[in-house]
Image 1 (cartoon, rainbow, N blue to C red):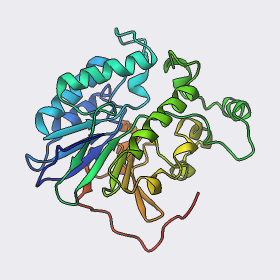
Image 2: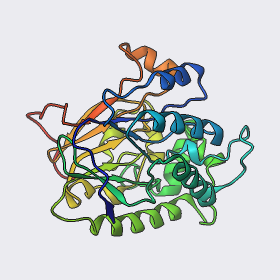
Image 3: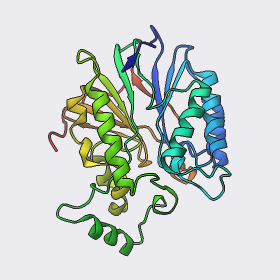
Image 4: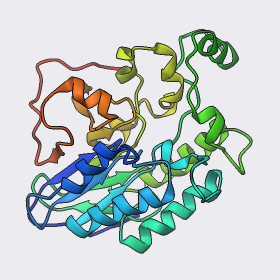
Length: 293
């Protein structure tokens, strides 16, 4: 299902991994402004761990931008010891969706909006897919991969505070989300391209530069490896890795838009928190592109 909620002007902008519990990042969010009153903003997960922080940040951004679209990261799904909201798993996610609707922020549970500004029309598809440990070395079983990660001392905090309730496991929750989302994307008007927006990368390639390769286990699912082709993606927008860059596959740009923690963005230099423009297109078409799986 899609909803015509476009704009005849403005820019489609994106940012992720705001982590507003860090005072420096909170100050950056307070400074974010649109360039025009028609700008849309994609907020691609990991706003924060606490309900109050997520509501504060999304509420502030919704006051400033024409349209705000949010997808959850893993941190929003944590039942964090410091958060008085003790909801777990799917119940927590659906409560976050309710908060977004109260604020007027679009979510993966709403009809996909159509951007009709420069570079449009294009369907904006916010996704919530999780991960299933399939970004692991070839020939290695899931138990072997988790043992490999533990031996290296690399275990994501999700293992302790991201609960899959009512699903038996995070990978089964992921499978359910992938199946439901695939059906929705298949129903999108085939005449329209899409912008696929998900906190985790939809393909494995972005994880190849991780300092700790074991962390890739918590970074996505191989089930979405061909979605950029199947669902006519003009671009795929993601976060999570805290490695802002653009890579290309099959002629499609995969754009990471993360801010990350202060210790990370300080190393990068430049102006932290710069919004990435997704449309009209700002990334040059390269002379190379990864092809296939």
